[in-house]
Length: 129
Image 1 (cartoon, rainbow, N blue to C red):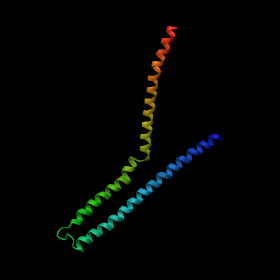
Image 2: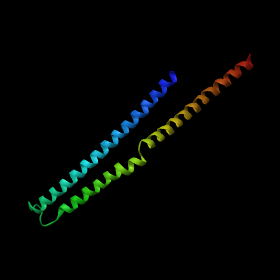
Image 3: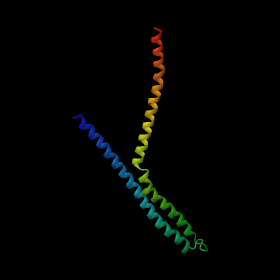
Image 4: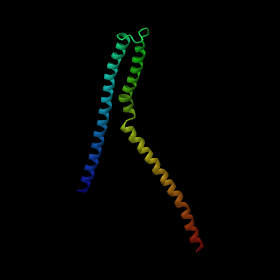
């Protein structure tokens, strides 16, 4: 009876993590799509400023601005679809487990160092008695 409760709690925690991860991914993709729309509207706006309003007409500066913005957009795409797969939740979990394992190992080594002198003192006292 008690084991069923623990399994249910564990499943609820896993489901909560899955839902949280899904919400995070949805938010990332939503921001990416918003960035895409802003990129399109902004590009058209820059072209209109240069060509229609004739601001800096002697030089097509909008090309450089749009190119730079496109580069930033490609970085955003890379971050959402590529980097997140390699450095996502699973990577974070494995890194966390490695660090916890190292900490446990250090703690056990420190405990051994503390126990060794106390064992020597105990042996010395026994020999003296």
